[in-house]
Amino acid sequence: MTLAPPIPSAVLQPLQLPWDLRLTADQFERVCQANPDAVLELSADGHLIAMTPTGGETGARNNELLFQLTQFSKAAGTWTVFDSSSGFRLPDGSVLSPDASLVRLERWQALSPEQRRGFAPLCPDLVVELSSASDEGPRGLTALRRKMDAYLANGAQLGWLLLPEERAVEIWRAGAAANPERLDGATSLDGGELFAGLTLDLGPIWEV
Image 1: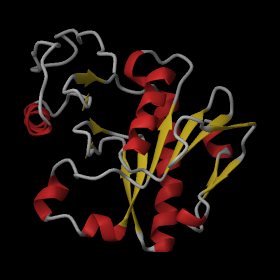
Image 2: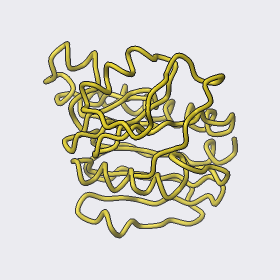
Image 3: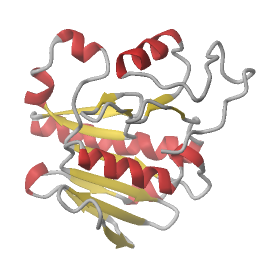
């Protein structure tokens, strides 16, 4: 995974680290605790990935996405929703934060209180990422596709990569990560049997 260039110290303080540093997931968690304003992820090979804040459109779209997933979760009663600030410690040693995700409630409840407070040691069942045509680096389309592939390799059952500028969606399914299905002109998404009752209305997301 390509490492982002250093963030100017005037923008991000007090984080000052060599950007070729390799960390374990435990060390990464300590770095994040010491730098709560930093937006970071950790690649499987231990490199820090410096994320940039989202723009206004992406933030509003993400809010609508979370609203719909939360409605589904409350109605179903068997899922827990997580936002983009939630990091997950994946089996390959990386720590990634999807824009939105769902974890089956029984998996979440099986974790200890300490595991829940930190980066949960599991991969979400459903992951959703939002792209932007202007994005580069860790939030660019190439990087997001690598993340989708990583999620599925680490146990995710379904991934949705939303492309608002094109009003299209890439559907990433377990067992077929190398061949995501693309839907052009998509107006809704169905979670299928694994996420029975989940329907995502894309209209409000596209129209932001």
